[in-house]
Length: 172
Image 1: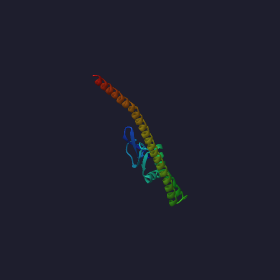
Image 2: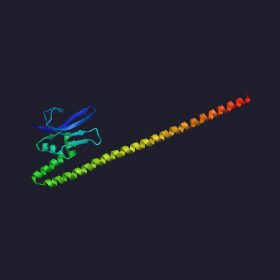
Image 3: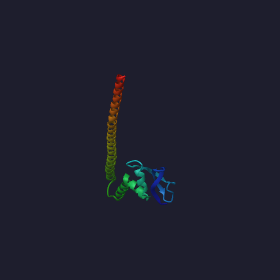
């Protein structure tokens, strides 16, 4: 029974949400699966990926073949690296402790990159909001400035009408 690690689509139309599953390659895309390994939400920025790395490594070592997208997600979360390091431990190239240290160092570096991207996005969003607020203030000030002379002209016109009325009252 050939096993694939692939995505199973959930969510509503236009808002996809995926489960990362190990499934028989003959089963339907959204059909029966052997084990749920995680979830992938592409709607957020950066995309949210939750993955059971050890479970994915177990399936990879047992011969499961990931789909292209699943392979990208496994690489993103470090499951392929951990599988590679586990192969090195089996061959005696490095010890379990060395492999674990390398994986943790990579994981910290990856977390820092993702956090930097999230911070950059939040900074850009804050900058865009500040620029929009400044533009809105400028538009409001222009409206106020345009409305102020009209009010003054109206006051002058009413004063002139009042003066004419007084003059006509005095003549009578």
